[in-house]
Image (cartoon, rainbow, N blue to C red):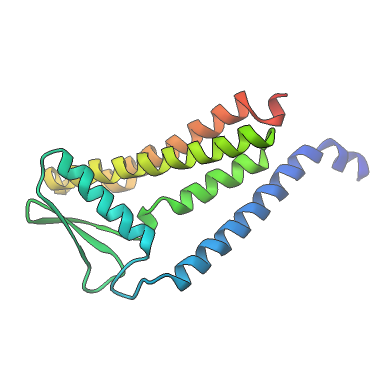
Length: 180
């Protein structure tokens, strides 16, 4: 048994570190959601911010865009040229994806400074790509509402999780202790 543990020591360390960091960050995020100013008709601060920034981004494409609190859900209604196209909900704010990203990077941590800056840069990149994703999908829903399923259920995961996967692979191949 001791040989088996020794053989898989790095794998066990990775899994335990990942799970521990993921658990702590997820509990912290849940606590943030529980104490946020959101009500049942108004989302948390970050989701509201993402909706407002998405609005600005879509407006930069030349569309008349508005956001309003949804009357029946803790989300923001996104309206393009007076047509309701989407809801920005808590799951759209990219924080849960960033938690997943950070957990992996810490589990595969290299030296402190590069790890810290990679987490910051990667989190910002995920956040910005998420805003672009919301804008592209919303404009897509405005023009092609019958493509809702493929836009939200296929394009969304491809964009956001594809970005995270590429960031992970870059990290493992360039900076992690596994590379050293």
